[in-house]
Length: 321
Ligand code: SF4
Ligand code: SF4
Image 1 (tube, rainbow, N blue to C red):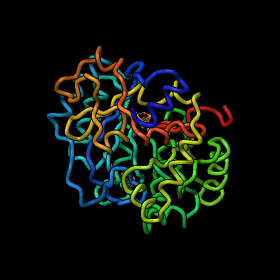
Image 2 (image 1 turned 90 degrees about the vertical axis):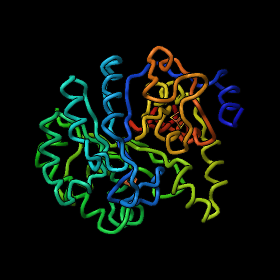
Image 3 (image 1 turned 180 degrees about the vertical axis):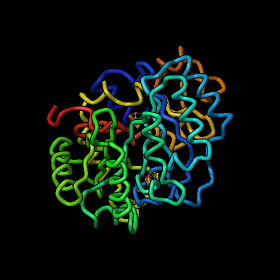
Image 4 (image 1 turned 90 degrees about the horizontal axis):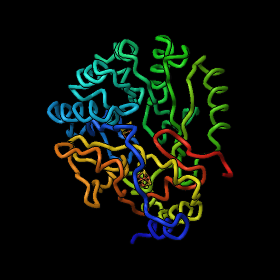
C-alpha cells in the first residue's frame, strides 16, 4: 500500500475506483513544438512517438460503443500528429464531441494557419495553455517568444469567434510557476480577464487552474533545487477529502499513443498502465470492466487532492470546502 492509498484508507475508508467513463482522453503523441520546463511528459520537437491510424480506429470503435460525453485530445501538440484532422473528422462524423488541448503557439507554426477555421468548422472545444498573463512568467516556464506567439494565436482564435461567441469555447489553463498550489480559480480568472483585455483586447471563456504534478521535468527541477521533499509535504499536508468524488480518473480513461490505457495522463507519464485485473490495451477494451476498475495510484496523486483539487478540467471544489 503506497502513502496515497494509506491516506485514502484512513480518511475516505476505501481505495480509489472509477465511477463511469464520461471522457476518453487520447494522447496523440509526444511531439511538440515547445519543450516546457514543467512538461510532465517531457515532450519536445525531438520526440518521435505518435499515435498511428490503426490505434485511432480501435479508439473510434470503442467510442462508438461507450458514447463518451467528449473525447479530449492531447499530446505533445496533438495537432502535429499527421492523422489529427482525419481523427477529429471521424469523431465528429460519429457525432462525438471533441475537445483539443492546444498549446496555442502551434497555430502560429508554418502550415497551421488554417487550424482555427478547422476547429470552428468541426465544432471543437478548445483548452489553451497560458500559465500566466505576465510575459516574464510564461517565458521562464515555456521558453522564448512563447508569450508573443500565444497572444498572436489567441487573437486569431478570437477573430474566429473562439472565446467570444457563446458556442465557441476557449478555456485557458493556469499552472503555478513554481512549487506552490494554484490560487483561487475564480479570483485568478478575474485577474486574467482584466489583464488580457486591457493589454491585448483578448477574450476567453473560463480559466482552469491546474496543480503542478511532482513528475516528469517538474520533478527533475524540484530535485535540482532540492525542493522535492518540501513540495511533497505541501501536497500531502493539503490533502482535501472533498476532492475525491470529482477526481478525473473516476470518470475517464486515458489512451497513450501506442494504445496502452491509463487511469489518467499523469499515470501515462509515469508508465503506470491500468491494472488490478482490468485490460490495459485498446485492443482488449471492455467497457463493463473498465468503468468500475480500481485505479492505480501513487504519491503523485496528492497533486490532485491538494487544496481545491486539480484535474484537466481545473479545480475540483470551492476553496475552503
Ligand atoms: S507542456 Fe504542453 S506545450 Fe509544453 S512541451 Fe509539454 S506538451 Fe508541449
Ligand atoms: S494522478 Fe490524479 S487523476 Fe491520476 S490516478 Fe492519481 S488521483 Fe487519479
